[in-house]
Image (tube, rainbow, N blue to C red; front, side, top):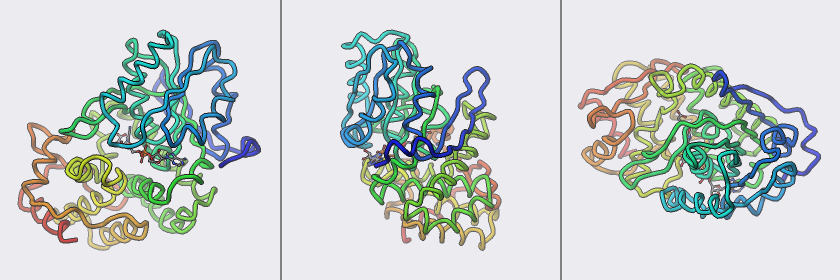
Length: 369
Ligand code: NAD
Ligand code: GLY
């Protein structure tokens, strides 16, 4: 667990540029203790630290100590896990806010992984028609991806993240020292999104991640800071150009059409989101090659890095019909026909429909692993 001294380490500051809704992302060991950045947001206001049963005991006390200027601080502790990312849990947040008489000037602080961040963000988006919120992501996945960009929401039994809203945070504090307590399986799941960012947008970053992989797996602070900062930079740039996913932002879903199908089909929480994205990226890479977009050497490098990271490269053995059915509720689908984020080259993505024969060949190949 990080100590107070880490707050003096140099940190990387980035910006998500969205006009008057722009906000900083601070990356570094000790970012959780940036009272100077939290104070102007929380001063004199009611603040809820929304966390879960695993993360709250580890970090809520230290975060609370940074919120001395708030009028009141309430802890909202959610059950842990993707399986709880639904209406009933969300309603528990509203119950706590209403019981504590939170008004429209209140602030939510999401302390946890992507599940907490997505739910607290959605609660902030709709509570009394919208209140401010801050993201304090504590998993690698949340630090490199879900805490940035303002996508918030919950799952529906028929589809992943199907109910939600765009609502940007006021601040993101990504403290890589928190990752020291993260289980290795969760760290590896986060690497899926790191690999994704290199694959879709920056070949040099993909190479750097491959070089840094042993250090990342060993939770080396400098390597983690490099990855979190570069991934946030890539995501911030995409979001600044296309906040509402009218076009470009869809590339951030590389591997997700297949991945969401795996998550929904297995039952939420069986495969970690990042694991499903890992196998999904291998499937999207295969499809890119079948369509003649990506050459075999680049395809092999993606599969090799996903595998070296310890992510699954083989998908569940389901029929093509089952996959197609599961993918028909994907948010990129139009009238039930899915679109896929594919690669034209390592570092360059595009969005396409896939001919049925190529898609079925990919599904058959993936299921035999
Ligand atoms: P998660 O939130 O379930 O966290 C993983 C596990 O790690 C949980 O058990 C959590 O309690 C625990 N944990 C968190 N921080 C810890 C720490 N520092 N030490 C010890 N344990 C810790 O999973 P996740 O991978 O962070 O997020 C996945 C979710 O993010 C999915 O629901 C996915 O849909 C969502 N997501 C959203 C976006 C977006 O743009 N909003 C992007 C990608 C993923
Ligand atoms: N994770 C996809 C997005 O933020 O758009």
